[in-house]
Image (cartoon, rainbow, N blue to C red):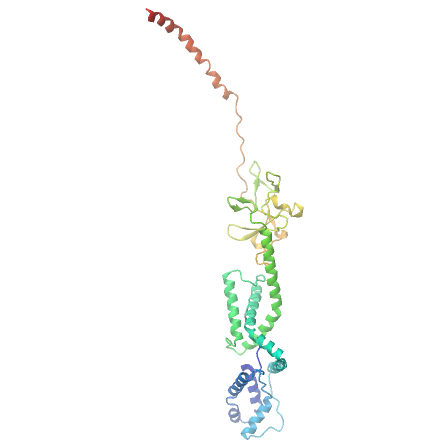
Length: 377
């Protein structure tokens, strides 16, 4: 989570200050005195870090005094006056911060409780590395033009989050820093991540609460609001007898109850539906019925996928200001046709056939009268 004063960068800056203090000597003497200086300082810092757990930070001291010691060891004359060593302003700031950090660590470790707390925080450094990568992902998601998305919603976002977390962990381990400016950039990213972390945590909590409330609004009961052939109905379109579309039609069921497409019309603000292209639209109730009872006034109002707001809720939010009358599936349908009137003459054929049975009596007397006598002879 933090860098000590004995980082390679601080050692290089200290070595540069020592060479600057020896600048009055010939170049060959300076090279002889400072040959392998960085390696010696690095080894010294590593030995102290490994051997003294109570004071893991090494104070490199004053570079001018260090240069004077090198002069004395080599038998070279010491400057009469202390030369002005030109140390970069940023380098001086880093040294001061490092000294303050080392002093704070020594004061904290002066007590048993402080030492235990500091050791515990050092163990939690990998957790901070993961949090830093997560915060960077959330900031990049906002800068990319999307809403605050602290939890990935698709495979690509998961890959991006994993990449930032891996990079942050490697930075925390002191790796993947091939350029000299990267350690300073890492420090800047860490400071910004600390400042943004509370905002990301609040956004995550808000999204979780909005998601839970959305589930309550959309699914207050296990049964759907209105079904047809096993599929949920999200809107209804009515046409008159001439096949013309009708608007603001109120529908009720056989018991006089409002025919709603949602289970809880009072507490439901919008209903999700998908268009033919698979984009998510939002259906909203009519504004002509006060108190949120406009879910049975058809056709319902529609908010297209382009107007759905994902700024604070990754599930999407819809507003009446963006709603418009839903387009009808057909501009006109087949008009109703009345059946032709039934004519009275069509019912007379049955009585017209009734006189025919009277022909049988007219023919029967002749043969019957003649046959009877013949049969008797």
